[in-house]
Image (cartoon, rainbow, N blue to C red; front, side, top):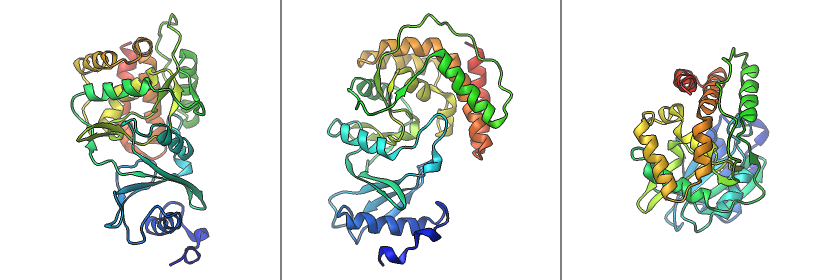
Length: 303
């Protein structure tokens, strides 16, 4: 089979995964990164993009190929393959992310190839995740990344825009103090959910780097501490004790104290925004999010 045998114009939009995989395999074979004898097995973990594990006896290690779906970006989470490739190269040899192999932008869309991370999704004790995030937030980011802003004004504006887009009758934003320390500019993953933290024999790794940015660490903290995100990935919401342990471990590992202070002050707004995001996701067909929106609403009211 050659590329001419696969008529890309006839591909159903992201539906024919077998055809996509065959075309993608040929492209990466031509680049010399993947063996012609390799076996491609689709992984079920990706919520936004099709992902395959690639293995072969004549390859030194298994690889992962991710094909980016340009329509999968959401108001809170970008889906940018260029950013992921940039960050994986930037984090080479730091033991925090998968090892980068290659990036291509073809007729199929952007795709990235990286070394397979052999482990299981995180669950359980929070200290390891806190230490991993502290390490990330101390690394100088590539300046090409966009900025993330977490001022009360920006959080309210983002949330109201999501609500308008789906016709949601949104409760008013919770009141938070405006007497906040100025945010620091740190390296942010942007999507630190349990499924993106992999437990390996030698420690934890962060995967799925399609929405990194530079900005206030409170943004990363808010995603991991969100009860909705914990439940959607099969965990229980973090208890107050879990959160206290998380902050203690994060700060002890050199994490950003200003980010913790800002998160603590802005937590009601972060929960309010996440509740609206869950409604936005449900309105776009992901029913699982509807059931967890109430948790975020309750926390936003407790501020």
